Length: 198
Image (cartoon, rainbow, N blue to C red):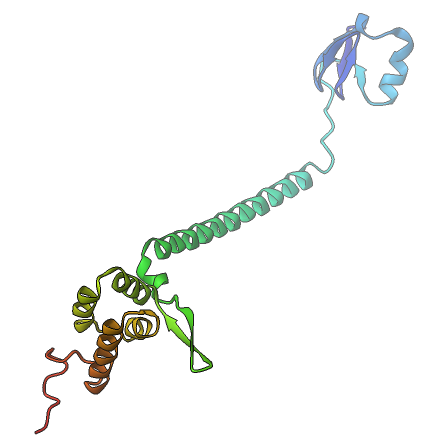
């Protein structure tokens, strides 16, 4: 006998054989020949190579793998779209936080003012509070001059209620009255002109 032809991959004596390869006769123990032939691992060598059996379900396995690959690609596309959406939202939030006008304008701080046994809650934006604090740091004379050009009603209320200097209180009250009588327009400005008696 010339040897054997490998039908299914196997290892004999530490040497691996794949389907279709030739196996020398001395590589197979004589007591195992019949069992290996019966189990379909080898066949006696002939002049023609032994047919290699087709892998059962090969086409089905390939189709299943292709379906899994397509599903993975769909999942990757969905994840990339979600990532792009999150990046877009992050960039939008960064822009909104970078421009202070967008989020500072909407901030109102409620300042409780106690007066005549009651509490008046004054909603003040940061600019009004800054104007009020700047007025407190000026001398009475400088503060009175600054109040004459002030147009912020909330700052004038805070100055009148919280500044302990009498001249400053009188100036704030007079300026608020002037703004109120002119409809919020600054006397002498374009908004205030044309509203006189005709």
